[in-house]
Image 1 (spheres, rainbow, N blue to C red):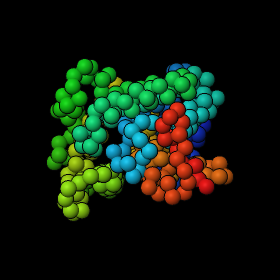
Image 2 (image 1 turned 90 degrees about the vertical axis):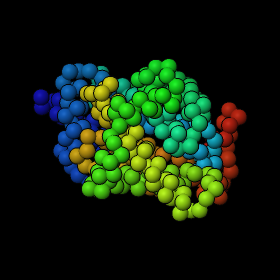
Image 3 (image 1 turned 90 degrees about the horizontal axis):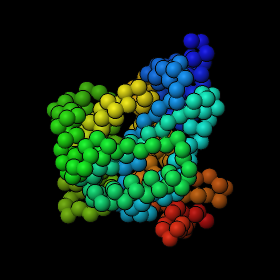
Image 4 (image 1 turned 60 degrees about the horizontal axis):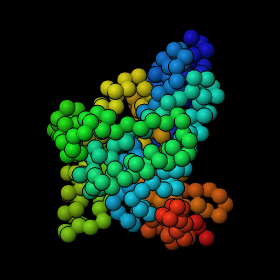
Length: 301
């Protein structure tokens, strides 16, 4: 048991430098993660991580270079693969990382057509194969509801797994972490809206209402993933407080803790370091570089 605890702490120590969240705490404060890690280590099995994310590109062309995965996703996947490799060095059975793509869960709320989400998901799987990321698997609504239409799948996930609107509103009012998530999603919806035939205040009101829908479905998707993989160590691309059942993980450097590769584009600086920035800001720093005939990243001057 002592050896199990030590290995679990070593694995957690590899995750902590990349934590996406506020506040600093000792490893012992991350009890939910340590307990699940210890279960896999004690059983001498691969550690299973679930990571909801990689949904689709933002619909706002001022933020991204296109509709398909590019250098941002590629480097994020490489980072995760490197992390898996390092964990395998302290836990020999290794890691199984499940990317739980949630684009179809939110497509209608974020203004992205389902065929764009399908194209993104197909290219993401191709990227995983091309990069030879053997520890990775993908999971999405097709694995839950089969061949039903995307609209029907969204209806079913809301009916079976989502909290009610009243429950979400009440949680946002009483819990600061829930309020931060709601405000962050509202901000993203506002920034991701490229075309709107109304006033700024009208758009803000609409985004606040849509944000409640996104929060409901996010909770529903979390419940789906938890039910399918009840023992997994739960990762999140959203900031998470110390002690949460989910561990927020930062994929790449960015100006704030909310930015992801699918809401931005990657900038390569002359000194070699990279960061994620909105396209409109990134283009002021340099030129777009193509890869395989598509815009891939910005090379700073």
